[in-house]
Length: 372
Image (cartoon, rainbow, N blue to C red; front, side, top):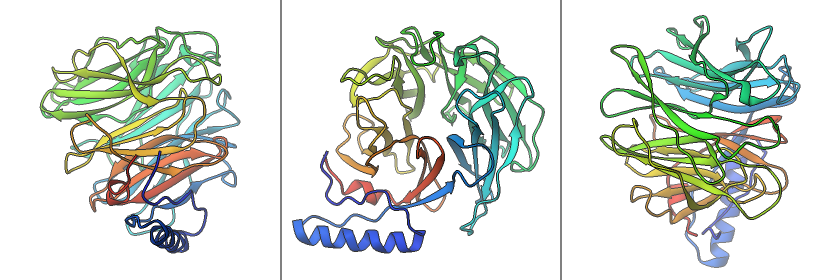
């Protein structure tokens, strides 16, 4: 992949990082005659120094109606630790300091995982998460809580999906008909180092008027797929991009899976593999306010680096604008993205062997000037 100008992950204070990134960009652009891209500021949100357990993964966040950012992640001693809990923290509007993490979901008997936090149009904040009673994720169910006060207090836990193996990772979207669509997935297999080929993505529709959930059909593909991220292109017409299933062994097989719906997410086409490689890692897809699509993925078949951003201006037919947000040794994975009211794009992701959560902030122009 070639970009007009590229800056690697910067670990300086945000102001100094932006200045250094701009200086590097100007020098590189002058050298090769390329257009100058807007710098991408990257900061650490939370890391090993925060006493919520060394493991901090994966993050989800939302912009609240008052402009604050609310972020959730799960932490503990490791991915399968019994004492893992869901933590929440806030970045007040106009501030550069996140609040200290607090426990927002826990259970003395079961492990927690994969939180998804999202504010609905009626200002209710939803927290979805995985409840794992057994040794592997295939024993999980999907729990949820709601908050009426921007995440200051939460309801008791209720179960959204009771079938063993049901999990959540990606945020819901509001459809043109007013329904909420939540991507979920059904993970199968008892081996913690792989998922079985019948692992599948599916979707839950929520009617705010009746408060009823309905389940779509399941999306199957060659290697299995999971953790769909979805957008609505036009009323009732949607498409989703999914992580591929299988193992984590080095190789050149396995790509991001695409599925489509023409009836508001009630039914979905079989999964087909796209051009994008996937190392069995989460992806992100959002629709920007101008109609462009932002896709975040690891541009590799077998490692979770680099973390690449791609933009489509034609409804997902082509993705000519691509730029690495982070690259190098290690992993940069499980991106979550939002576009805030000021138009900026925010992306959180996990790094440092799933012990650090970082946030990148940039305008769309930081990606639009880049090319393959």
